[in-house]
Length: 582
Image 1 (tube, rainbow, N blue to C red):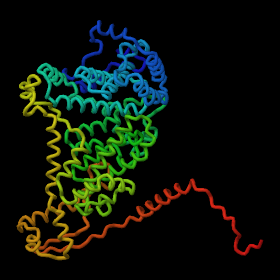
Image 2 (image 1 turned 180 degrees about the vertical axis):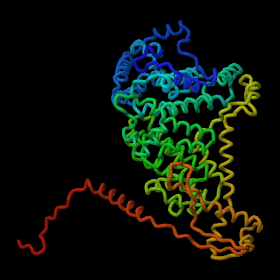
Image 3 (image 1 turned 45 degrees about the horizontal axis):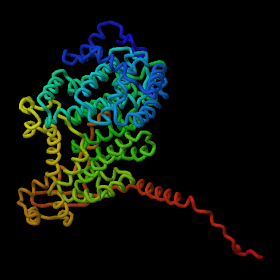
Image 4 (image 1 turned 90 degrees about the vertical axis):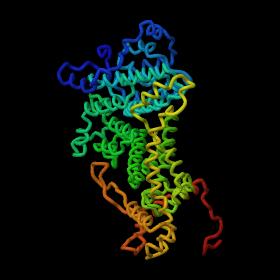
């Protein structure tokens, strides 16, 4: 098939290519169906389907620009023309089939795979795809990635498209897991087809991760990023583009690192997700910061991983950076649907940030965002928006109301997936629509409940800390029995709560180093508590004063004042000056 494409040529035969293919597809079940196996009669019928002139023109020019490696024109057609045509002609329907447009692109095999990638993205974005469409999209991704991995790619594509290719690949995996786990309303035939998909490795976590890992390995992106740290290369400065060389494999390998991390977060492996990103300097500008979607997605998932690991200051730092980024870039967004995604992630990060500020301050913020250790990491604009959006919720959280955390977590968390799918007992007994309902029918919620249970357990352990802190701040010294009487709990329970307060007063915070998991313990409380026998001594911890925030706040006020005064007319004094004679 590669011989029919001018965008990619077949690799030279040799032991290296055979070993790579063996690693990419270790078992026969990981192989996908070839596009050439389509029923000839169906293919002929699709090839004869009418194609609108606008689509013909789009395909001709799009193929020409890809063949000529005209990245700017490719980006323009991908980012502007394709959404515009979709909105005008295919708002409620799919684009023409690949068979019908292939003749306008010289039947180029690789271009047809790229077209189908955009075709199915439009299908997934406009409605609920069928199981057949999900399988066809998987086959297309498998064929496209196999061509990139095992062929000599000689095209250049915009980084935006390459990022959204990985992003959509993981989104469709997530969507299929959600669809597979929802057995309510599915017949025995549909469940049998899902079991067949699982047997063939279609949209399984193992095969998805396998493709992403192979992309990282074949692109040698890790070694390139190591050389960039040693200032031997300028990968981020050139944005992955090289003269007379393809950027496709290496850039896909870079974004695959972020994709692997994201998949691990969806399955609850937070430490593994952060470890995967060690080759990328998350605290410095990089290729991911130059693509808006990649920057926001990375910050959201990295921040959420830190959040679930109890590293609330690190989580707040990443959320703050991304919220500032979104506020600056949402005005310049060129595509409405991408803006909607950014705004949704923005609202989710505000909710996560609200919880991080309360938990990261050990309750010292009292519902505000001015005293908490984590809150001091927020920029003034972000802190102000946080007060407006979640001020009441944060007050409830500071009082230890567990339901407030439950609501915020349910809104802000990602859609977790269970890699294994429904148990065989559920699939065997689900039956038709009527018998599908019942216990275990919504297996899709198990992953979410598991992560929610872990988070609520962490929050519940802090439930009595607000009362304990409020009492301790009234005394410089107090005995354990007296404090236990005031809290109406036993001495043993009080000592347990004091130990919880001591542990929650410190969090691990990243300071420097290549690993996102590295860090040192820092204090996040404004109250120092010392217990010696039955005596408790307390002292206030002075928070460092942020002079920078003071000046930034007043600069912002001055800028606002100058903008208000700009339309005003200059005053003209028509009277006599002092000492002036007529």
